[in-house]
Image 1: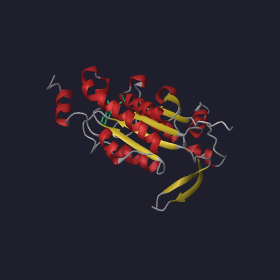
Image 2: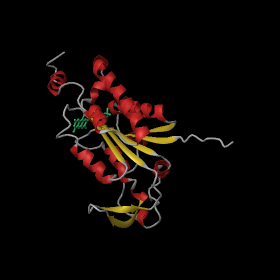
Image 3: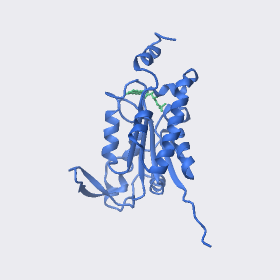
Image 4: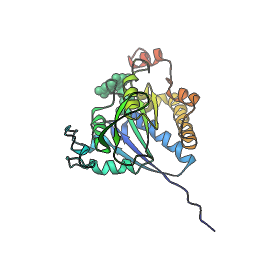
Length: 237
Ligand SMILES: Cc1cc2nc3c(=O)[nH]c(=O)nc-3n(C[C@H](O)[C@H](O)[C@H](O)COP(=O)(O)O)c2cc1C
């Protein structure tokens, strides 16, 4: 009789928060991944990107003409290998100046060797360099928290950048008021959200996407924005 092999989903979490393990967003990401594990076996590696101290891309484009090798020798090649071997890459970060924190942006720039010089125009008219490695199994997810209570007039830049960078196979979760995840007194509001994120992770692992309803629920503010602002401003205890 043939043995049935269970496929293990390899997940790479790129924690872009300079706060490392104390990241507000990482709490959400871990809940999402825990939910995924309910649906399928996972092998998770978490990398605290700002602690890796990668040099920034120097823009030489050598990687585009030499088969995808970076001239900078600092361990990023190992990370590119890790990305290529992963089924899901989660960019987890708190919003910084309406975008991703600097160290994570450096990391994204350093993924340049994955693509060749050839430019390709998609059906929407968007140009992008063609990949020179096999990226067919890679999927991407952005999980982003932020300190303000509003999503509109706040997340748009980061969301658009991610959509343009990864136009295919990408999911995006944005959650406002995320410092609440590190405030024990806010547990009555954050605990249900953590459970919702676990359920969303399970749904994502089963269906490969989130329903509009689930997405709306997990991306909504946990408390009304005026009340959050009053707490933040010390006008309410
Ligand atoms: C330099 C800096 C810039 C920030 N910019 C924004 C911003 O543009 N919008 C926002 O809502 N919050 C902003 N915040 C707040 C963070 O997004 C918030 O504290 C978030 O919970 C941090 O997530 P993390 O703990 O995962 O790093 C900023 C924080 C810092 C330190």
